[in-house]
Image (cartoon, rainbow, N blue to C red; front, side):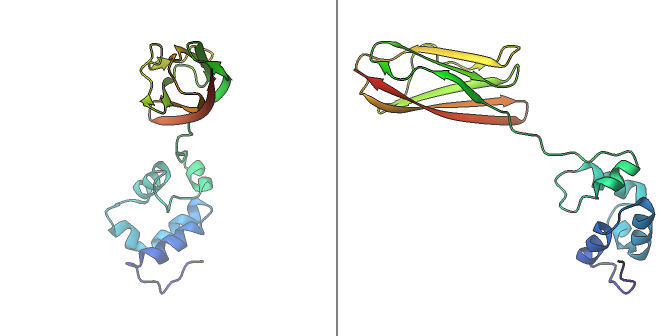
Length: 175
């Protein structure tokens, strides 16, 4: 419902009027009754609608029904990159080879960090890799012969453009 006595500089009231609109006709009536919107640097209703439908960061984005009515699609925040465990060698004896395989998105770039009591491992094989066409990546490394027995975390971070995902696994080193 549009308040005909609303202060045109009251942005909260204007936003409330806009959020109650389900069609372009209702939006046009709301903006006509609350011209303060167009005084905020948006010169036309079309510019206002395009701005509100395009920016997913706007808390006061227009309802999807209005955006689709004018052919604009509201953008949604990018989904996280999914990272799943396929396998992990555990337990593994000191001096043996450990292996981790994960599945993520094809061509995602992933790094691995195996952290022992002494800090992050520098073992060969623990490098940044790119997932194959099925989304799989495997890492193999030799566990040191003097590594203390116990449980240790494996941190995997993947990215695909501006999207990210992570996975934390645990493995056990035995004698």
